[in-house]
Image (cartoon, rainbow, N blue to C red):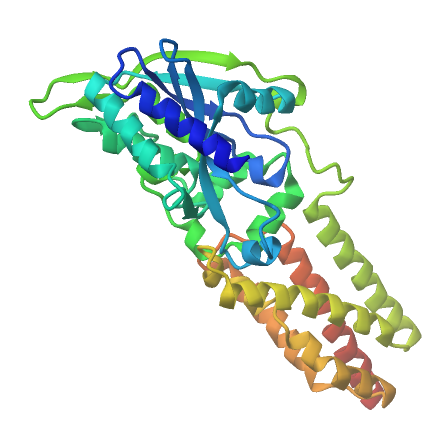
Amino acid sequence: MLFFLLMSASVLLAAAQGRPRTEVSVITCSPGDEVYSLYGHTAIRLRNDSCGMDIAVNYGVFDFNTDNFMWKFVLGETDYICMAVPWDAFIAEYRHRGSSVKAQVLNLSQEETDSLVSYLQWNLKPGNRVYRYNYLTDNCTLRVMHCVERSVKGRIVYSLDSRRQTYRDIIHQYTQGSPWAEAGNDILLGSDVDTILSPRAKCFIPDYYSEALDGAMIRDMVADTRPMIRRTEMLLEPVGHQADVREERDGLPVSPAAAGWALFAVLALTALLEYRTGYMLWPLDFVMLTLHGAAGTVLMFVFLFSEHPTLDTNWQVWLLNPLPLIAMPFVVKAAWRRECCLWHYALGAMTVSFLLFSPWMPQRFSMITIPLALALATRPVSYMIHYSRNEQ
């Protein structure tokens, strides 16, 4: 099927090359509900009624059936495919999703259109269609941007957003309706996403690129200018909940911040109960160490081995790391002997120092991070109070 689509696209592109009235549009699709579609999508539409061509060139195709797909995704080794599909099939997917679809018809000369079509023919060849996806610096939107820029005879002067924003600021605009997805992103993404972006770098998001094109001009070698966009058409209007990207999508009854503070409250009350009864609930430590160590192992693994950008600058490994799994047998042994373990002092120092220094760390943390650190700190504090009281 893939081979058939690519061959059909190649035939149509070859037929369209050199023909007048081939219309090139940048297609912007609004965000969807799935995690991979939270930021929207960009594609290119090529239409020429004289040769029966109407296709979408899509740089956002990936195959869930690829061997070890999830493992490669975690390691940042996910390859995406450039593929041409019939326009009717492309827009049907977004109609079913309820997304809006906007077309910005480019104001290209015949020579520029032929250059773009020729490049797409090359890009769709089996040896050229696969690329290593990077969600911040090499995604479907930036591929379309590159394709258009290399085809224009002159320089594109964009209408760029000049607000001071970081990658995290922009990502939050699209995940505010999915607080758990936002918290997951914030836990995984390191300090590199908190640097101020250049206006051009913001175009990694489909909406930002579309807005940059709206007022863009093409300036040629003799300083003549013309609008980048010939006309704009809204091909699909958003339907239902897609009309507001900020609607809650997670479907969970509690937010990450509320869950973090609830955990802190439960553990603080447990520590108070231990103080009043003089009995330490050491099985709780077994559960906490397991969960803490498992989360820390995942975070440390992607910190060390993933090719995803920004993950290796994450200051939260100070708080979430595999050390609790190493400490577990010593904690259990000390509990049986009714002794304070070195781990209690180490965890106390780790959490308290993180809380003290976090305001000066060059990273914006997840809404769950601070209450989680406080919750973890309750265990060593409870043990230290318990054993110091017994020694008196």
